[in-house]
Length: 136
Image (tube, rainbow, N blue to C red; front, top):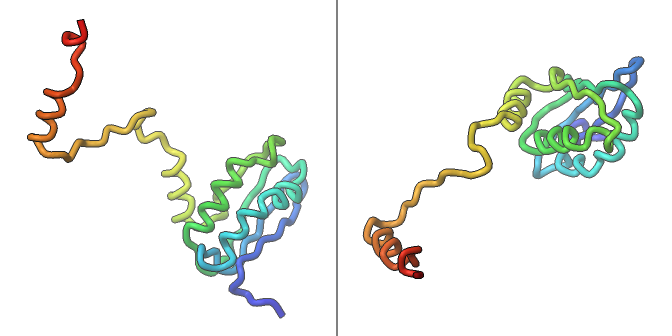
């Protein structure tokens, strides 16, 4: 008999829809993080289905291992074959975190990190920095 707390997945097909059934504990310290290595198998079992839905009714506990798995699955999308990924069957907190991860937070390509060095250091650095007017 298998341990029900071990992170497992299986695919069921219903017409043109594949359902990824998740169960057990999807935890970084357990077997959940190893499931990321299964992405090629998941995509292979989804085959040419148009969409992939989740059934998390057997999910016990989860942490970032589940998020990493779903994020990697979003990135792989069947090795280029492409299928719609329906996250509505995941726990609501996972859906919100995935939405936050995908959102454009207006940062653009460059982070605006404040300089926490002392005022004296910044004045000295600006004074000693090469200036365009000095290079003539």
